[in-house]
Length: 456
Ligand code: PFF
Ligand code: NA
View 1 (cartoon, rainbow, N blue to C red):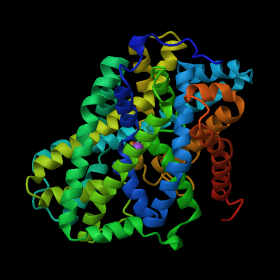
View 2 (cartoon, rainbow, N blue to C red):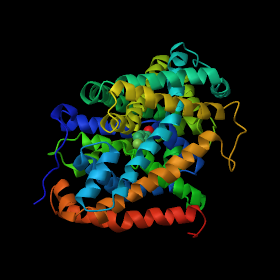
View 3 (cartoon, rainbow, N blue to C red):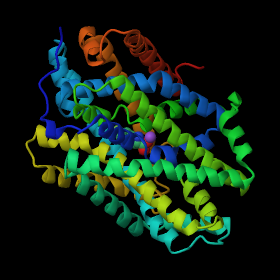
View 4 (cartoon, rainbow, N blue to C red):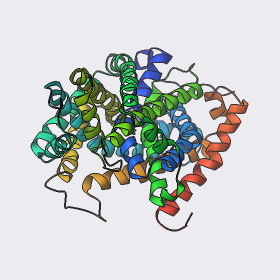
């Protein structure tokens, strides 16, 4: 009968199951839920897009999250070494370790724009705290955000600060850094979202927002919208980028992968839907455009903060929470690279952080410039930021996830995956079916229709 592979020392593991859940939920819940989900749902017409997204989460996201955590927990190392180790255990081609490499690279690219957007959130803490939005006209609030984007040096300053904070915490390691931050901050974020939804119910447009989000109009759904929904399901759950693999590798052997994965998916979905329910009522109440793009929350929520009682206090705390949510996800984006540099290249955590951080910083300049001086530099109509987002979320994460599905389902021995998932129960058989057939077929079909080879 299979046994666990030799693994990390206990001090390199999460101290409790709850810590893992909070850290994994911290990795999952981030800008993807609060910043990205509402604006892409708005751009893609609402209801039908959200339905496809929810189906992707339930049918593909959860089983793939389990697969990725499983690889990490069994491999007990960084994504590249873990893949190599499990390929060897299965007697398979060592080239499978390239899946780990792809994950490390994807996390790296994602983080380069993630820090820029997180920088917007951080910058809005002092802006909100100084009472800027109190009584300000919605239009002026929109102009305020546009003006912010037009200053490259200011954007660079804030994204650099985000990067330094990320590295400062990640540099401290699993228990001292990652765990402590997540335990404290995650629960607060949820409280805040609920309060904001409470405010949104007073705008008089809550019903319109619910209809926009939950009444599907399939005529608004496009081929590219389906790819965006699929990619976002992976992005929001942090699948396909090695993040959940590395977090899984810190998971003690006796924790149920299935239960924790489901819980993480539920928390993540709840956060996204709450964010939508907080934002769209304001969009409709003030006649704003749901498809306004990446600035959506930075324009809608400040309107609310400018009007509601105690709005300055609330707004300030909200942007603190948003920054924190972004930071806990940013850790997970860089941790695969750091673990690889320390475990494989023998660097200290500090040196690895400095090296990885410098690369990300350089690349982040491309995203910064795409909102101002470089707004005209486009590739197939997409700015640098849009291209990076499209490449990573639309293609690299789904590809990474597809390869992980194929690996766990067809390369690893079923005895071993069953062992890691707690035995050959009905749940295990359903998981195996989804991961063997449904996930690869759906991802491939969506890829083919996105490049126009098949029409749906
Ligand atoms: N899941 C994060 C979010 O929703 O903001 C983003 C993310 C983190 C994506 C880690 C991928 C990843 F590996
Ligand atoms: Na998320």
